[in-house]
Image (cartoon, rainbow, N blue to C red; front, side, top):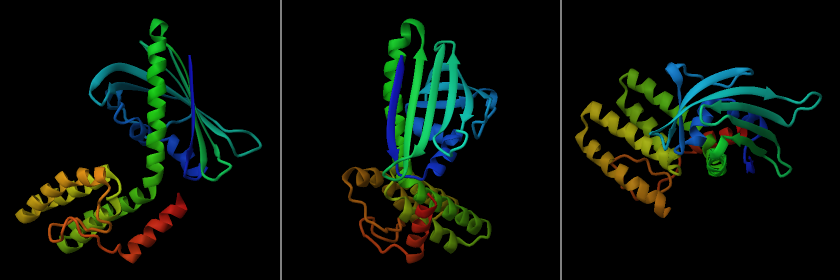
Length: 266
Protein backbone atom coordinates (compact mmCIF):
# COMPACT_ATOMS: atom_id res chain seq x y z
CA UNK A 1 0.00 0.00 0.00
CA UNK A 2 1.22 3.48 -0.86
CA UNK A 3 1.12 6.91 0.74
CA UNK A 4 1.82 10.09 -1.24
CA UNK A 5 1.89 13.61 0.18
CA UNK A 6 3.24 16.88 -1.20
CA UNK A 7 3.66 20.34 0.29
CA UNK A 8 5.22 23.76 -0.28
CA UNK A 9 8.24 24.69 1.84
CA UNK A 10 9.26 28.34 1.96
CA UNK A 11 12.98 27.69 1.53
CA UNK A 12 15.31 27.45 -1.44
CA UNK A 13 15.49 23.94 -2.93
CA UNK A 14 19.24 23.87 -2.24
CA UNK A 15 18.58 24.43 1.47
CA UNK A 16 15.86 21.77 1.61
CA UNK A 17 18.00 19.23 -0.26
CA UNK A 18 20.92 19.80 2.12
CA UNK A 19 18.65 19.40 5.15
CA UNK A 20 16.88 16.20 4.04
CA UNK A 21 20.24 14.42 3.98
CA UNK A 22 20.81 15.05 7.71
CA UNK A 23 19.77 12.84 10.60
CA UNK A 24 19.06 15.96 12.64
CA UNK A 25 16.23 16.93 10.32
CA UNK A 26 14.73 13.43 10.52
CA UNK A 27 14.71 13.58 14.32
CA UNK A 28 13.17 17.06 14.32
CA UNK A 29 10.31 16.47 11.89
CA UNK A 30 9.45 13.04 13.32
CA UNK A 31 9.25 14.32 16.92
CA UNK A 32 7.23 13.63 19.04
CA UNK A 33 5.53 10.78 17.14
CA UNK A 34 8.75 8.82 16.61
CA UNK A 35 12.24 9.01 18.02
CA UNK A 36 15.17 7.28 16.31
CA UNK A 37 18.01 5.92 18.49
CA UNK A 38 21.12 4.61 16.69
CA UNK A 39 21.85 0.99 17.66
CA UNK A 40 25.07 0.51 19.65
CA UNK A 41 25.39 4.30 19.90
CA UNK A 42 26.69 4.34 16.33
CA UNK A 43 25.42 7.86 15.72
CA UNK A 44 25.18 9.17 12.18
CA UNK A 45 24.91 12.76 11.04
CA UNK A 46 23.97 12.40 7.39
CA UNK A 47 22.56 9.85 4.97
CA UNK A 48 25.26 8.73 2.56
CA UNK A 49 24.74 6.93 -0.77
CA UNK A 50 24.65 3.22 0.01
CA UNK A 51 24.40 3.91 3.74
CA UNK A 52 22.87 1.36 6.13
CA UNK A 53 21.83 2.60 9.56
CA UNK A 54 20.07 0.50 12.20
CA UNK A 55 17.93 2.44 14.64
CA UNK A 56 15.67 1.68 17.58
CA UNK A 57 12.19 3.15 17.22
CA UNK A 58 10.43 4.85 20.12
CA UNK A 59 6.81 5.86 19.62
CA UNK A 60 6.06 9.19 21.31
CA UNK A 61 9.70 9.19 22.37
CA UNK A 62 9.31 6.41 24.96
CA UNK A 63 7.37 3.33 23.72
CA UNK A 64 9.70 0.68 22.18
CA UNK A 65 8.67 -0.33 18.66
CA UNK A 66 11.52 -2.59 17.59
CA UNK A 67 14.43 -1.72 15.34
CA UNK A 68 14.51 -0.65 11.71
CA UNK A 69 17.11 -0.46 8.98
CA UNK A 70 17.44 2.82 7.09
CA UNK A 71 19.01 2.04 3.70
CA UNK A 72 19.74 5.29 1.90
CA UNK A 73 20.54 6.26 -1.67
CA UNK A 74 20.66 9.60 -3.48
CA UNK A 75 19.21 10.09 -6.96
CA UNK A 76 20.15 13.22 -8.91
CA UNK A 77 19.11 13.64 -12.56
CA UNK A 78 21.64 13.77 -15.37
CA UNK A 79 21.66 16.84 -17.58
CA UNK A 80 19.47 18.92 -15.27
CA UNK A 81 19.65 20.07 -11.67
CA UNK A 82 16.17 19.14 -10.44
CA UNK A 83 14.31 17.19 -9.15
CA UNK A 84 16.56 15.45 -6.63
CA UNK A 85 15.47 12.38 -4.71
CA UNK A 86 16.51 10.62 -1.51
CA UNK A 87 15.42 7.01 -1.05
CA UNK A 88 15.16 5.01 2.18
CA UNK A 89 14.56 1.38 1.22
CA UNK A 90 13.97 0.48 4.85
CA UNK A 91 12.70 -2.62 6.59
CA UNK A 92 12.39 -4.29 9.98
CA UNK A 93 11.28 -7.58 11.51
CA UNK A 94 7.71 -6.23 11.60
CA UNK A 95 7.68 -4.18 8.38
CA UNK A 96 9.11 -6.06 5.40
CA UNK A 97 9.02 -2.97 3.16
CA UNK A 98 9.22 0.71 3.98
CA UNK A 99 10.28 2.13 0.63
CA UNK A 100 10.29 5.89 1.09
CA UNK A 101 11.19 8.44 -1.59
CA UNK A 102 11.67 12.16 -0.87
CA UNK A 103 11.53 14.41 -3.94
CA UNK A 104 12.80 18.00 -3.85
CA UNK A 105 12.22 20.45 -6.70
CA UNK A 106 11.70 24.18 -7.22
CA UNK A 107 8.08 25.27 -6.81
CA UNK A 108 6.58 27.39 -9.58
CA UNK A 109 5.49 29.92 -6.93
CA UNK A 110 8.97 30.11 -5.39
CA UNK A 111 10.45 28.02 -2.62
CA UNK A 112 10.35 24.24 -2.81
CA UNK A 113 7.88 21.53 -3.77
CA UNK A 114 8.57 18.70 -1.32
CA UNK A 115 7.02 15.25 -1.74
CA UNK A 116 6.96 12.05 0.32
CA UNK A 117 6.05 8.76 -1.34
CA UNK A 118 6.21 5.54 0.65
CA UNK A 119 5.18 1.97 -0.09
CA UNK A 120 4.65 -0.21 2.97
CA UNK A 121 4.20 -3.94 3.43
CA UNK A 122 3.77 -5.72 6.75
CA UNK A 123 1.60 -8.75 6.07
CA UNK A 124 -1.75 -8.64 7.86
CA UNK A 125 -0.60 -5.47 9.64
CA UNK A 126 -0.18 -3.56 6.37
CA UNK A 127 -3.45 -1.55 6.66
CA UNK A 128 -2.50 -0.42 10.17
CA UNK A 129 1.05 0.52 9.15
CA UNK A 130 -0.38 2.35 6.12
CA UNK A 131 -2.78 4.30 8.35
CA UNK A 132 0.09 5.22 10.66
CA UNK A 133 2.18 6.33 7.65
CA UNK A 134 -0.64 8.65 6.56
CA UNK A 135 -0.55 10.40 9.93
CA UNK A 136 3.24 10.24 10.20
CA UNK A 137 3.93 11.97 6.88
CA UNK A 138 1.22 14.57 7.44
CA UNK A 139 2.94 15.34 10.75
CA UNK A 140 6.42 15.38 9.20
CA UNK A 141 5.42 17.85 6.52
CA UNK A 142 3.67 20.07 9.06
CA UNK A 143 6.85 20.09 11.16
CA UNK A 144 8.89 20.84 8.02
CA UNK A 145 6.79 23.92 7.25
CA UNK A 146 7.18 25.13 10.82
CA UNK A 147 10.93 24.57 10.70
CA UNK A 148 11.17 26.59 7.48
CA UNK A 149 9.55 29.54 9.20
CA UNK A 150 11.94 29.35 12.13
CA UNK A 151 15.17 28.42 10.32
CA UNK A 152 16.56 31.96 10.06
CA UNK A 153 15.82 32.56 13.74
CA UNK A 154 17.45 29.29 14.78
CA UNK A 155 20.66 30.24 12.96
CA UNK A 156 20.79 33.57 14.79
CA UNK A 157 20.04 31.79 18.08
CA UNK A 158 22.94 29.39 17.47
CA UNK A 159 25.31 32.31 16.82
CA UNK A 160 24.16 34.15 19.94
CA UNK A 161 24.50 31.02 22.08
CA UNK A 162 28.07 30.58 20.81
CA UNK A 163 28.79 34.19 21.80
CA UNK A 164 27.19 33.52 25.20
CA UNK A 165 29.45 30.53 25.81
CA UNK A 166 32.51 32.58 24.87
CA UNK A 167 31.47 35.26 27.36
CA UNK A 168 30.99 32.65 30.10
CA UNK A 169 34.46 31.24 29.44
CA UNK A 170 35.87 34.77 29.65
CA UNK A 171 34.06 35.35 32.96
CA UNK A 172 32.13 38.31 31.51
CA UNK A 173 28.69 37.97 33.12
CA UNK A 174 27.30 41.20 31.66
CA UNK A 175 28.13 40.13 28.12
CA UNK A 176 26.80 36.62 28.80
CA UNK A 177 23.44 38.03 29.93
CA UNK A 178 23.41 40.35 26.92
CA UNK A 179 23.61 37.40 24.52
CA UNK A 180 21.01 35.38 26.45
CA UNK A 181 18.63 38.34 26.21
CA UNK A 182 19.16 38.44 22.45
CA UNK A 183 18.46 34.70 22.26
CA UNK A 184 15.18 35.31 24.10
CA UNK A 185 14.14 38.11 21.75
CA UNK A 186 14.67 35.95 18.67
CA UNK A 187 13.19 32.75 20.12
CA UNK A 188 9.90 34.17 21.43
CA UNK A 189 7.70 33.15 18.47
CA UNK A 190 8.71 29.46 18.83
CA UNK A 191 7.68 27.70 22.03
CA UNK A 192 10.51 25.16 22.17
CA UNK A 193 13.36 27.65 21.62
CA UNK A 194 11.53 30.17 23.83
CA UNK A 195 11.45 27.72 26.75
CA UNK A 196 15.07 26.77 26.04
CA UNK A 197 16.12 30.43 26.29
CA UNK A 198 14.56 30.68 29.75
CA UNK A 199 16.16 27.35 30.66
CA UNK A 200 19.57 28.76 29.71
CA UNK A 201 18.91 31.87 31.79
CA UNK A 202 17.77 29.74 34.72
CA UNK A 203 20.86 27.53 34.53
CA UNK A 204 23.18 30.52 34.35
CA UNK A 205 21.43 32.20 37.29
CA UNK A 206 21.70 29.04 39.40
CA UNK A 207 25.42 28.68 38.66
CA UNK A 208 25.96 32.33 39.59
CA UNK A 209 23.60 32.08 42.60
CA UNK A 210 21.45 34.98 41.44
CA UNK A 211 18.44 33.81 43.42
CA UNK A 212 16.09 36.63 42.41
CA UNK A 213 16.80 35.79 38.79
CA UNK A 214 16.25 32.09 39.49
CA UNK A 215 12.79 32.84 40.85
CA UNK A 216 12.01 35.18 37.96
CA UNK A 217 13.02 32.61 35.36
CA UNK A 218 10.93 29.90 37.00
CA UNK A 219 7.88 32.17 36.76
CA UNK A 220 8.64 32.94 33.11
CA UNK A 221 8.98 29.26 32.23
CA UNK A 222 5.44 28.80 33.56
CA UNK A 223 4.12 31.85 31.68
CA UNK A 224 5.78 31.14 28.31
CA UNK A 225 3.37 28.37 27.16
CA UNK A 226 0.39 30.51 28.17
CA UNK A 227 1.72 33.38 26.10
CA UNK A 228 2.19 31.11 23.10
CA UNK A 229 -1.33 29.68 23.40
CA UNK A 230 -2.95 33.11 23.66
CA UNK A 231 -0.65 34.75 21.08
CA UNK A 232 0.06 37.61 23.47
CA UNK A 233 3.84 37.48 23.76
CA UNK A 234 5.47 40.93 24.13
CA UNK A 235 7.67 41.38 21.05
CA UNK A 236 11.28 42.30 21.79
CA UNK A 237 11.07 41.49 25.51
CA UNK A 238 14.52 40.58 26.85
CA UNK A 239 13.19 37.93 29.23
CA UNK A 240 15.14 38.93 32.34
CA UNK A 241 13.55 39.33 35.75
CA UNK A 242 14.56 43.03 35.80
CA UNK A 243 11.90 43.83 33.16
CA UNK A 244 8.17 43.20 33.11
CA UNK A 245 7.29 39.90 31.45
CA UNK A 246 4.46 41.71 29.64
CA UNK A 247 6.39 44.71 28.25
CA UNK A 248 7.05 44.89 24.49
CA UNK A 249 10.48 46.32 23.69
CA UNK A 250 12.21 47.49 20.50
CA UNK A 251 14.23 44.80 18.73
CA UNK A 252 17.88 45.95 18.39
CA UNK A 253 18.55 47.08 14.82
CA UNK A 254 21.59 44.83 14.40
CA UNK A 255 19.60 41.80 15.56
CA UNK A 256 16.81 42.54 13.09
CA UNK A 257 19.44 42.88 10.35
CA UNK A 258 20.95 39.49 11.26
CA UNK A 259 17.53 37.88 10.85
CA UNK A 260 17.06 39.51 7.46
CA UNK A 261 20.48 38.29 6.31
CA UNK A 262 19.71 34.73 7.42
CA UNK A 263 16.40 34.87 5.55
CA UNK A 264 18.36 35.65 2.38
CA UNK A 265 20.62 32.63 2.99
CA UNK A 266 17.64 30.33 3.53
